[in-house]
Image (cartoon, rainbow, N blue to C red; front, side):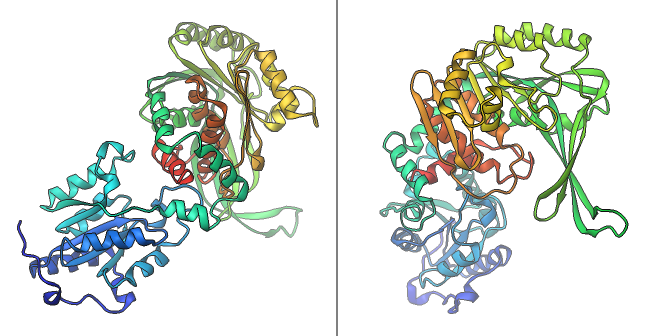
Length: 523
């Protein structure tokens, strides 16, 4: 539809007060509809606008030149996928800042997760994006394609500005202490070797890998409660039950993480025949995960129930529903039979060994012998302290464990960690060894390239449960693809920074948020 553009002195004035310019998205839709009926050309900009800078001003000026009324829609805080610490400024502050600009007529905070949905609500004549979005193939989110189709579906057009661009992320990283000094120093060195685009290209190479993940299925339950106080008759704290939530943990979590980065994930695991929870499990696997389940006729599927103080996510105590024994010989033979057929077919085999009876001596020996490339995490937890060591594996190409697990494996509490990692690599004939060290970050050792130390990339921790599975699920394909140790540590810690902001294993770490976080760090 062709609409005559009005001159500035013909335009209806926008609200003069900052607070009057800020309106809910549905209200803005009605306002825009009325303006269009008056023959006004409505121009729509959308973004985070975390830190206003000259590039934004020039972008708004170029946008306003395309019409009469300029509306700016902000990404809601919870949908800003730029990693921990972002946005620096809340949606309310960002809205007030933009509304204070005379060139902007209306501001709204997007109530949807995507810009395309906002477009269908506001229905502008012109949708304006920066020139960096003009090549749709370079947009890893695919958002610009959806937005173009949305604006075209309502009879509008897409316009790209060509003004000089600046980066809010770069300015924030450089001048606002978003990154701690040690992280900034690390990132500055890394930027000399890698760009975000280069890392994205390398991550895309992982899609061709065929991955088999073997291990124990665990259902993680969170029973949220509120402590009421000490019991009058017992030396216990009484708590009021509030609600509960279940997550797909153990090998399921690792498979879901990996499925976001590789094309095909095959999973082999064992469920208890009694209360198998199989319907729940299958419904919580990503479409890219193909499971093969075996069954222990004498057991139930492992459940770890944590009682959690809501809303602080403080874990009060844990109850584990588990049979402390190895899987039956009959089940073991079935698993060995399928593994013998399957193992040689895959580029990468990941063993998630939580020490709960799945990995018998025969299964360990087979995956060590038959796997083309084997990545192993042998976890120490409350059920197996001292009994589930990485050294039970005769061979692994990639070892990924934490600091206490490495020290337990060598009965060395205070020794130099680098020496222990070298010793592990030699003993297991491993090409790579990674040790995760909590607040100290990670240490990656390559027999070819030596050590790479990476600091933690965020101090924002919601829940640590599942972070190790995420780290393993994403770094193992990177190691199998031949990534250098500094890049493995960086990617792994970026994954960890995102994973600790997720409650339990409620959702896996996905490729797009990870790459956006990496791009933000490397600005």
